[in-house]
Each structure stands twice: as C-alpha cells, then as structure tokens.
Length: 350
Image (cartoon, rainbow, N blue to C red; front, top):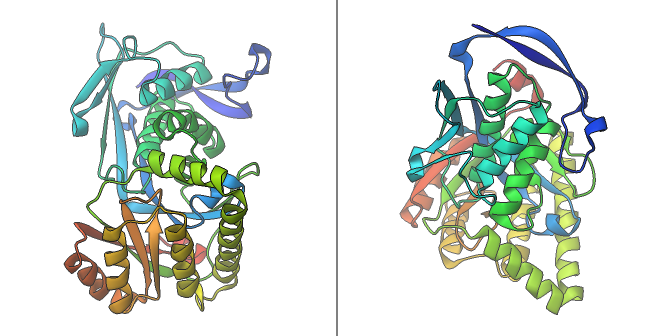
C-alpha cells in the first residue's frame, strides 16, 4: 500500500471554466491497496427520448450492467503515462497524444481536477460494449478511465463530477451530445434527463425486461445528430412538433414506471419509434428487427441511441424474452442481450 489522499467533496473538482480560487477540494490522508487500481462502467440504453433530448425535451435512460468497460492501472516506474486500448489496437502516451484525442483529453482534465501530475503508469481499457451501437461505449470507457484515476489517487468523485469530465470527451466524439450517456453511466441508475436541469436518478416502481438487439450495422450518432439538426433548421415547425410529441411520450412512460404499471408503455415505445423514423434516423435493418420482435410477442419496440444502425430494444414479458430474442436473431440481429430493470427493493437485495 501507499500513502495517498481521500477526497471529501466541498464543492467539486476544478473544471476549465472555473478559476483557481474556485478549486474547492478537501483531502484526508488515507491508504490505497494496489490490487484496487481498476474501475468499471456499465453500458446504457435510452428507453425513450433520443434526439428530442438535444432540443430541450426529456429522455429516460437505463444502465445495462451486462456490458461493461474496465480500466486497469499498472505502475510503470520511469515510463510516461500511457493509455492502452487493446480492443482497437491503439496505444499512446498522454504527453504525445493530440489535443483532440477524447480519452487523452478526459485523462488530462481528470488529473487537473485532482491537482496531480501524470503518474508513471499504463492505463489499459477494455470493453464488452459494442462500438457504435447506441449503448454508450465512448462514455463508458471514459467513465472507467476517470474512476480508475480517481481510485489510483485515493479520491472519491461524485457522479456529477465524473459526468462533467466525461462529457468533454463526448463532445469530441459526437459533436453536440445531449449529455445523457455520461450522466446515466456515471449515476448507474435509471435517469430522467433534460438539458439545462440537474439529472434525476430514479427507481422504477415496477420491474421490467428488455431485449436489446444489435443490428450489425454500425450506428452513426454524429451523422444522425447532424442530420436531425439540418432538417430541423430546414423545417423547424415540423421538427419542433416531433420533439414535443416525443417529450409527451417520455412523460407518460415515466409516470407509468414510477407509479407501478407497465400498461401502455409498449405502445408508447412504438409511438416513439414512429417519430424517430419520421425524423430520418431509422434504418431498414432496424425496422426488420422491430417487426420481428413485435410479431414474436414484444409489447413494444424502438431503436435506441443515435440510430442509422446500431441497436434497438423491445419491451417484453419475462417469459417471452428468449422467444423475442431468438426472433430478432433470425431477422438479422448479430447478438441480443436480455436485461432486467429492477425496482428499488430488488436492487437493495442484489
């Protein structure tokens, strides 16, 4: 073990728009065991509200714990801080990484927020979350990186602090991200998110099961977001109507989940998909999977994430999950995930 310091938050870490005088961190001396130099972060799906959330409407996102990113720190005395990404065969030192490399930016900002110099370590990040699938791969790897560095220095960051750091990387990856991915992954709970308002983690009052299916077509979040913005600029009245209708769907889904009924949620997800298709972000491969899911008994289904490929989800009765997943694979899904969203009571017993 080695001496380090534990953070007791007294206002949060410094971010680029804050002055030196606003660095309001408090440290207490402590110990960190070497075997704990790692951290993980879950994947995510947006249950409803994507794209409209960029324009001020709410969205609901969910963590998916079956898929994770994992960051591990190994000390390398005498060597420069290196970030190793074996899944995509990339490796670079923090010192030589370009300013627009997202993970390097997040690492630099995290070290600055912690008021520490780059350590002599290798930070290895691996992930089971499929890339370009709408499951928050980029936000998850950055979240794991932030948590691992904080743990290495014996610091505990609140979810809001982690989310703020990760968001800067999301800007480089996706252009104008909504902020929903970094928030739901940092909080690790179902999340009501609306731009300009504090994120609201919540517990569902009714458990439910989703089948998530990968279309095999890489999603294109940046292109999808840019395309919606371009069409919104060309037809603002029509797109504002779409966004408002999506926002109302999100309110209705949230009300049902928090009052303990799934009645009508499937139909609302179908309605959300209709609006997403009207916005131009669906894809024939996704539509085939959604049709197969509904035919196999799903209560409702929609794409999730940016669209133009990537993943979709289906709300199912627990007993029909395998049947729906098999139908989606027959329709072309390259893989499926069955995930259960528990109530607060179930979470407490996990």
